[in-house]
Length: 470
Ligand SMILES: Nc1nc2c(ncn2[C@@H]2O[C@H](COP(=O)(O)OP(=O)(O)OP(=O)(O)O)[C@@H](O)[C@H]2O)c(=O)[nH]1
Ligand SMILES: [Mg+2]
Image (cartoon, rainbow, N blue to C red):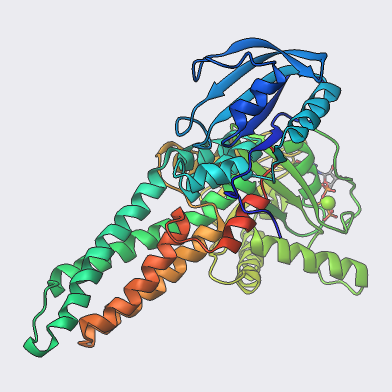
């Protein structure tokens, strides 16, 4: 059982990564933070001005340990909302370790993962969605994820959720009041305004949920499956995109047997390109398994680059065959798409245009666009890359709120269900106190996003995934 974050203890942790560096930071937070650090610098923290740095010697007993820059804060004007002292020491693992031991000897407790941020949440410095954004920000290793985390940290999402809640609370109160006057048969809550309000809310929630797959794709890497019959140049295309001989290329059909995935960041958007086994009918068990995996990956992909060979498309018969092939692929994809996610966008990619000209004014049904490339000569890749990045770059630049967190999506879905029940109930002439039951559920779910309603196990789960010292 983890110690309760507000158990009154003063906590400490090395907040910088393990290893050597110019500077390491040891953070101390809690009621005794100043007193403990004051003891380690022989009383020389006394009289310090909050939020102003001072240079002091730290002692391990009587022996000097390090010369440190101390940054003391007084709660509530600190990250955690408590008294905090940040000790900026020289970045030696020995000094950091020894300082931690001295702090613990003086009565501090080593912090649990995420405990500083958890305290910030519990002291009302951040709401839960913002606290989670801090975790995402630390994890962000490409521009897209960084942008999303910053947006959430900024609090726009939380404000919107709070506004949803506020309006619902008002209606709930009015409807519950009606119960007290049930004999008089009055309606305090205007039903037309209420219907409009819930409908608007449902629309907005639908928008937020729609943005989820985009947000998630940006945060995790947009999956792009490269698909098509053997020998079309799928592996050559992967290599060309990566500018590296990653996958084996040969003119033997059926070269790629298993799926192969590589990340590539293009202008700030991270993609996960998936090379797959060539699609064909086969009696070979291993190849058949490779093809099954290809469909599974394609079913979960955001984009499917369906490769065609320019030489097959020079006459009408060839183009008709390609039409049939793409139609079949679309059918397959629909079968392999999971749950409520839409199937990925299929782009027909005509390869080997160095050997034959690409068809003009033709695009197979089911494909969103036709792109002409020569993977071998790296021609046409810029257009392909731009098309892949287009939707994501605009989603990021619009300052649109994108939900990326599964927990938030889950809460929004449950809110939607509860509000839909309330709306159905309203249309069926249900009384206000019964509608209020569904409101309570919606309020609870929305409250879980920002932390207005928080079961303890949820908090432990969220903050347990943080790194120590944060
Ligand atoms: N001329 C030309 N040849 C290409 C091009 N792209 C690929 N090739 C050749 O086509 C052959 C097949 O390429 P791969 O990349 O192995 O094809 P694949 O689609 O991965 O094939 P499987 O793994 O068997 O499904 C190789 O000999 C490549 O050099 C291209 O744009 N132009
Ligand atoms: Mg291949």
